[in-house]
Image (tube, rainbow, N blue to C red):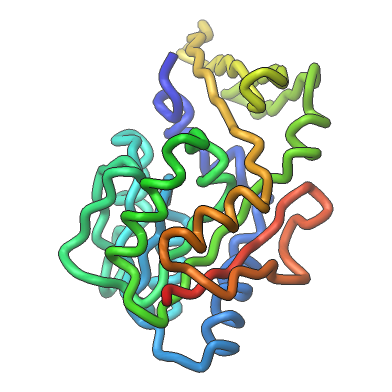
Length: 241
C-alpha cells in the first residue's frame, strides 16, 4: 500500500488541530537564540507545505522537499498566491540534492520517524552537505515510549464526506509502529474505500544524537518547552560545525 497517496488530498482537513504557528515560533526563537542570519530554509519532509508556506509568509525563503508527489501537489496548491512561493522538490530524504546551501533545515511532524534507522546516517550526511557551517537543523521526533503506547489502538476521524480509520500495531522486533489506514470518501450516493500503510520507527534520542555528531553536527540539545510535548513529541536543535 502507498504512504501519503490517497491521504494527501485529505491531510490538511485531518490535521487542522496541529499548532503550526507554535512550530514556527519555536524555530524562530532558536534562530534568534543563535543570533545568526537565517533567511533561506529547507523544510525536509514538507508534506502538504502548510508549515513551509507559513514560514514563507513570515519572510523566509523556502525549499520544500518530500518523497510523495501527491503531497507536493497539495503543497503547490497551498502556496498559490504567495509573493515568493517556495521551491518544491520531489526527493527522498536520503537522496537530498540541492543547488547550494541553506541557512537552516527543519523537519516536522514525525518526518524523521518515517525514515528507517539504517537510512538516518545518509540523511544526516546529505544534510551536512547542504546546511551551511553555523547553520541549524531543527526537528521533532515521537519518543519510543509514545509509539509503543499506541500498540493495539484504533482511531477514527469523521466528517460529512470522509471516514478515516486507522489501527496501530507496534512491532517490537523492528522497533516500529505500523498502522493501516482506511479512507472512505463519499462519491455521490456511494462510498469509495482506499487504504494506506504507514510505518514510524522508534528512534532512541541517543542513537539520533550520535549519528548527528558523526556527520558534523554539534551542540545537539532538546528545545523546551515545545508544542505537543504532552503527546510524546520532542524537538531537537543541532548546529552544523
